[in-house]
Amino acid sequence: MNSDIRYLQLLEDDLREAAEIERELDAEAAAGAGRGRTGSGPRRLPRRGWNWGTAAAAIVALLVVAGGIGFLTQPKGSQPAAAGGASEPRPVLGIASASHQFGNQPVKRAEGIAPALAGSSPAPTFGATQQGVALDPFDGVGSGSGSAGVRSTVASLAGSQSDLSKIERDGQIGILIPDKTFSKHVAAVSYIATSSGGMVLSSATLNEKTGTFTLRIPASHFEHAMLQLRAMGAVPGAQILYQDSTGQDVTAQFVDLQARLQIVKGTKARLVSLQSKATTTSQILFLGNQIDQVQLQLEQLQGQINYINNQVAESTIKVELREKDAPVTQTANNTVKQPSLGSAWSRSLQGFLRVIGAVIVGLGYLIPLALIALGVWFAVTLVRRRRRAASSTT
Amino acid sequence: VLPQEERTDSQLLIASWDDPEAFTELYRRHAEDILRYFARRTLDPEAAAELTAETFAEAFASRRSYTDKGVNGVAWLYGIARHRLGRFFRSGKIDAAARRRLGMPERELPPEDYERIEDLIDFAPIREALVEALETLSPSQRDAMHLHVIDGLSYEEVADRLRCTQASARQRVSRGLRQVAMILQSRGMELATEVDV
Image (tube, rainbow over all chains, first blue to last red; front, side):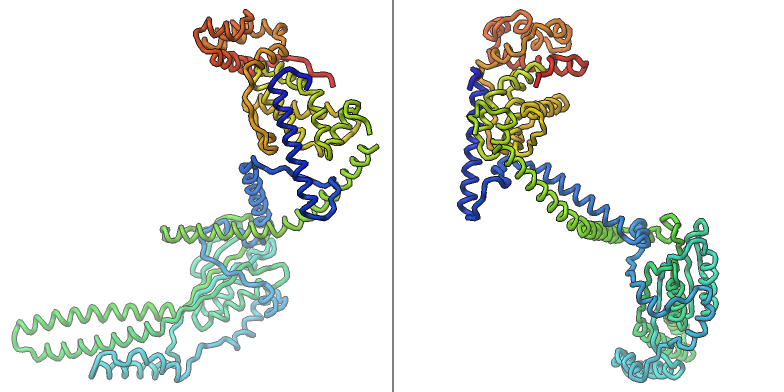
């Protein structure tokens, strides 16, 4: 070392040591691998000071890019659900299945579809076995005349109705429609509701491009109406964004309420009979109070039965229509109903899973590109090193 | 094959891929110039020494990325130095990542090197500007710098005048110089000319 500066002399020693370490690593690699390395390949010193911050930043950047790609590559129709975040989970069914069923029938032929489908409208039927199953839970309910009353009640119900099943049906469907056809599709939705014997309970539209509609349809026409709505999304230029139908069997609850109603009615009849035979004022007052309480129970049960009948008699279908160029906005239906910690947790979980899903999708795009880039980089590096090696020997 | 002393800087850099000793020859040729380059711009012996160490460590670690495009190898070295200096002026800190990667220790500047490096700085051209910049320093730093840089006293004499240890005197001068360098740099004042490469 020519310099008399001690620091520079020490630095030269440090560089020599680093060079020695590198040489040893090369020798170990050549001996250990036994692949006859020429020494021109890439060699790395031990990374004692690995920069974890940089590595973490790189990983975060990669995930953010992957997430961005994932969100960008999502079908546009699925974005409002992510943006709104407050709607119920919507299982998106394949468009192919809808197309498979309905082919390319245009929307304006919805009228033509209706009669064709009307004949196939399935009325849920349950045979005698179903009725027998429905009765089973009431074996042993009450005793003596009470139990007999339950059985007679159910028997009378079975006689008065061909179908004991009580099922609440709800559905929702989202349809992406061609531009400037919003009014036509609104008319089609209204037609489907009225032709099914129902009505449009409520509606909300925005800029004549998007809208949500709540239909109340007689339960017997639920499937019929859903089929017609799905047919709207199966025409060229349209797309079913999501569709979902749910059913809740409340038969057991209904029969239970009916049985309890009959028992309460019987009790009331007996109390009234006793009251007519009462001889003292105290007996009359006591029985009067008892009758009032029984009457209250009777009305509560009747109210619950009426509610179930109403829910079962009519189904609710929520329809969302959106033109393809409509801006993605949060419609009134996406507002949070009954906000609570539970719903907030549920929505945050949905958001988390969507982000993870988007990142995975994005990585699916990035990894092949990264492999190609790595291959190109390796080839270019190899060529450059060979050129350098050639120039150094000359 | 030419002996190392007769090789050009570019040839040394390329040869150092497989013969790290060639890099040592490059270091011997340019270490003091690089140190002077940093010292004249930072006015801080400690910072200049650290930046020199980091520059050579980074050059050694990335020597395989050097490509001979007709530019002298030392220009590549000064490119790294300029990059390091820019980062230092932006952040006020000296990164030791390259040294850590090579497993090199972070050494303290030996006391005897302070005045030797300050000789490299050559304070004469900037003495007048320093007087103005001194007004921005704390009294203790200003006094230490005044005695050492303007009056030309040694650290031992500065320590005697200020009734402090020599280490403390060096620290005050070093920090004061660093601050003055940053202030002058922020005002666009050129502290030293570029090294011809």
